[in-house]
Amino acid sequence: MSDFLMADHRSIITIRPVSEAARQWLDENVVAEPWQWLGGALCVDPRCARDLVDEITAAGFEILPWSVASPHAARGCMGRGPIRGKSRSRRR
Image (cartoon, rainbow, N blue to C red; front, side, top):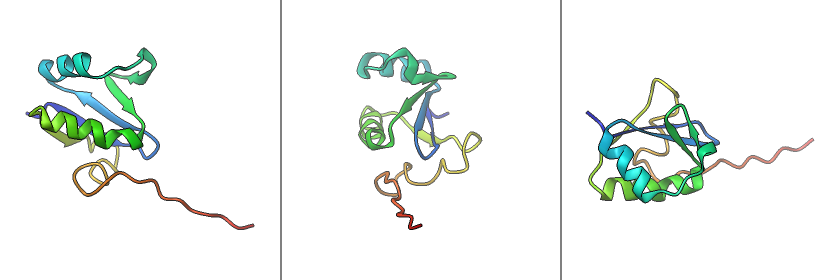
C-alpha cells in the first residue's frame, strides 16, 4: 500500500496522505494553511511540488499516481523530470 497518492491537475498538484504515518509526517514537516487542504489532499503549486516529493521520498515514503482523480497523474510529477508549465504565446 502506498503512503501518498499524487495527482497533477496542471495548475495544482494534490498530495493525499494515505497512511497515518504519512499524515503525521506532513503535519510535522510541512507548513500549510487550512485553505490548502481539499478533500483530504494537500494542494501544492507545481513549482514547489518537486521539492516536496523529493523530501517525502527521502523520508522513505512511497508516492503513487492518483490516476482516478486525474488523467495527468502519471505525467510530469512521477519521476519523469521536473514539473514544468508549458508556455504558449498567442497571436491575434
